[in-house]
Image (tube, rainbow, N blue to C red; front, side):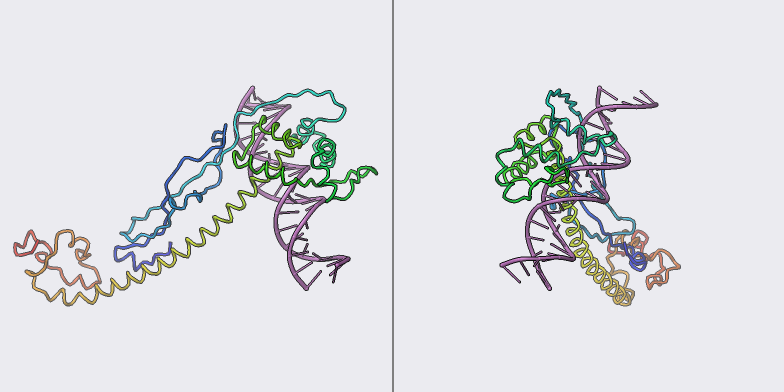
Length: 288
DNA sequence: CCGGATCCCAGTATTACTTCA
DNA sequence: GGTGAAGTAATACTGGGATCC
């Protein structure tokens, strides 16, 4: 924080910080905290996360940071399915794809698409109207990108709203319902989570920009106010010093915060070195 | 403790679609 | 209106870390 020394010499300091209400991270169903992630704050509840600018004594700065724990999935279900088809099942495709260290890790998504087209009569018409012909017929196993139908996207979105991660059973069920492979469902959810995170990051960025602007303005205002108070204090000094001791109403705490105790101070207060003036207990005529 | 299986994430490639000159 | 380049969104893949068994 850019607090100038001059301000500190007065015993006052400007502090920039955030006050937030720590809250328990919400977990998707069947999930437990697994590993900490990056430092974040709860953007979802701006009311509990307000920027603050404080004016106080030196050393009275408070920073409070909320550490959000990223949630991963625990308690994996290891599903072992047996198949008897000549063509690989969706689970086979998924298992091949999900094991990057396997020798067959690079499995063409064109295969996935073809498998889906065979099994999905419902969306065939729509696809045929918007796509070029499949080149697999002439031996070119070109990678073709699946475009989900509106119905499929809607159902996936609906499912994502309920839980941003899926366990194996949910994935299987959803894949079956959508006529997609579990792998496709999984990839969709991964990408969806990534998009959500990206959006949230952008929102956070905008929010922080506004916070920064607000706090900069507030800082400027308080610095100005501080200067004015200091000027006022300086201007009032001669008059203050000319007043008879009997008319002063200074309490013991004022003596300490006034900064007059140190005799080597360069401030005008150093002129007042008479102990009886600042010690009401040694001077019965003092107002305190 | 080690290794395999599985999960998720970050990064990236690829394809489809849109915009605009 | 047709067209191609550029930009963007969507889908898929890869590699690595974490966790469980």
